[in-house]
Image (tube, rainbow, N blue to C red):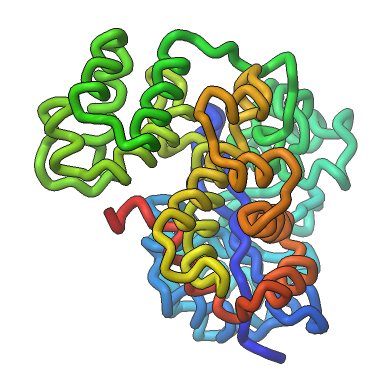
Amino acid sequence: MSDNCIIGRQPILDRSERIYGYELLFRSTEVNAADILDAGKATANVIINTITSFGVTELLGAHRGFINVDLDMLMDEALELLPRENIVIELLETIQPSPALTERCLALKEAGFSLALDDHEYSPDFDELYAIVDIIKIDLLLTPLESLPDIIERLRPYPCKLLAEKVENIELFTACHALGFDYFQGYYFARPDILKKKKMDANTASLLKLVRLLAEDASIEDIEQAFRVSPALAYKLLMIVNSVGFGNRNKIQGVRHAIAMTGRLQIKRWLQLALFAADGDDAFEHPLLDMAATRAGLMEQLAMVHPELLGDRESSERAFMTGILSLMERIYNISTEELIINLNLNEEVASALMNRTGHFGGLLRIMEHIEELDMSSASAELTSIGINPNTILDLQMRAFNWRKAA
C-alpha cells in the first residue's frame, strides 16, 4: 500500500453553526488503489505521520480533528504521538465492548485525549464506555428520525455530547437541533436553497465594486472613495484585517493604512472572503467561508504547478478568485452571469464559472472531486494536465492555512 494520500476535512458545527472541528478522512491518490485509507485499511503510521509531518496548526487551525480508529490502531502506542489537545479519537462502530477496551479508553482519557463513538447505536453493553467518551455520533442515514427521541432519552443520563452525522439538508438540521444535539456533521450548509439565499444589500454591492476596483488596479483614492459610501463596510473590513487570523502584528488604522501595510493582493482576497461573512459574524468560523477559502487556496497552489500556467502570477490570482466566486450563488440570490458582469471577469474565469471549461474550469472540477473525496476522478484529471497526484498533499496543507502565511 502506498503512503501517498490526501486528507479530506468534513466540518463539524456547533449549535450556532460555527466550526467546532473536522473529521479527517484519508484517501489514496492512486487511481487503482483502494479508495479509502481509513483506520480499517491503513496502518496507524500512515495517518500519524501525515498529521505530525505537516503540523496540526496547518491542518486544523484552532479546531479539533476527529480521526477514525479500529481496534488495532486504538491499541497501538503510536496513537499517543498525536497532539492530544487537538485530536478526538473516534472509535469505529466495528469495535465491541470489552474490559481491555474500557481500560485502554480510560488510559487515553487520563492522557488527555477526547473520545467519540462513531455511527453508534444505543446498547446497554456500552454503559461503561458511555461514562468515558466525550461524544457519541449518530448516523442519520442509519437511524430513522422518529427513533431519535428514545435514543436521546436513553443517553441523557451520561455526560457525553451528541453529534448528528450525515446532516444533508436544512430540515434534518432543524429537527436535530430541536432535539438537543450538540454538534452537526454534513454538507447541509452548502446545499443550494433558493428560500435561504440572501438578497444583495448595499454593503454587498459595495464589496463587489471594491473587488472590481482592486482587480482593475484602481488608485487608493478611488478605493477609499468607494468605502466612504458605506462606513459600516469600512468598519467590517478593518475588523477582518485586524483579526488574529489575518496575521498582522500592527493594528490597521484605516483603509489607506490597510492597503499600504497589507498589500493589494491580500486586501483583494479578504474582500472576496468578506462576501461570505454576515454582519456581526466571526467570518473565520463560517463553514461556507472555510470551504471557499480552502477551495480558492488549493486552486491557487495548483495553478502555480500547472505546466501551462507556470510563472504567470495572474493565473494564480485568477485561480484563487475562481474558487471564491464558484460558491457565491449558494448564499446570494445572484446568478453567475450577474457576478461575471458586475466584476467584469475575464473570459477564462467566466467560462470556468459557467461551464467548468478552460484551465481554471479544470482546476475547479478537480476541487469538486476532492471535496467529494472522489480521488479516482481527481487523480485522473490531475494526471491529464501534468500534475503528479502524489504532490497534492503538500499543496493541500498550504491551502488549508494560507491565511496565516500572509
